[in-house]
Length: 106
Image (cartoon, rainbow, N blue to C red):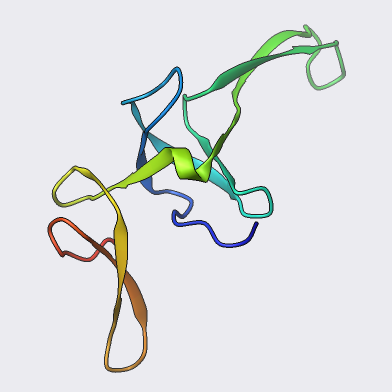
C-alpha cells in the first residue's frame, strides 16, 4: 500500500463503523496493509490458552486494525477532524499543517 497520512501518537477521529465519531490515539501504523491501531477502538477478543507468562489464560481484549482511510486527523489547536497539508520551510524541511486553521500539526 505504501504511505499513510497519519503517524503514531496522532489524535484521530473514526469516520465509519461501530466506533464512528469517537476520538483516540494511534498506537501503531501498519503501512504495508494501510491500516492503523487506535487505542480503545475496534476491540477484538482473542481466546488465549494458559502459558507460563499468562498462567490464567482466558479472553484477551485488544484493539484491531482500522483502515487508514476511515480515520481523520484531529488538529491539536482547533480540535476538529481535518485533512492535513504540507508546508516546506526555506531549509527544505517538510511539516504537516491543518487545512482548516492553517497551524502546524507537528
